[in-house]
Length: 86
View 1 (cartoon, rainbow, N blue to C red):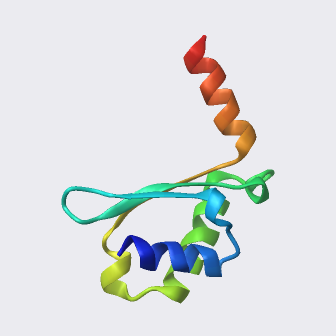
View 2 (cartoon, helix red, strand yellow):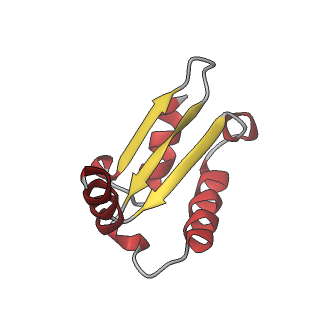
């Protein structure tokens, strides 16, 4: 199932380096996408665009197994790392 979600994200134009997914012990998929193209977009805009692409590419039974996909820019990740390292 992780492969299906990855393929859908690749079809949406994300690169393999931007996609970070893992399978939960229960067989669901979650993770995050880190992409420069999210810059200037709200989280709502990012999620709406991401899920529109996933709905266009995946079967409903696969969609229901996605627990969460966070959307961040590289700068946001860097800010979080800096904050965590104090």
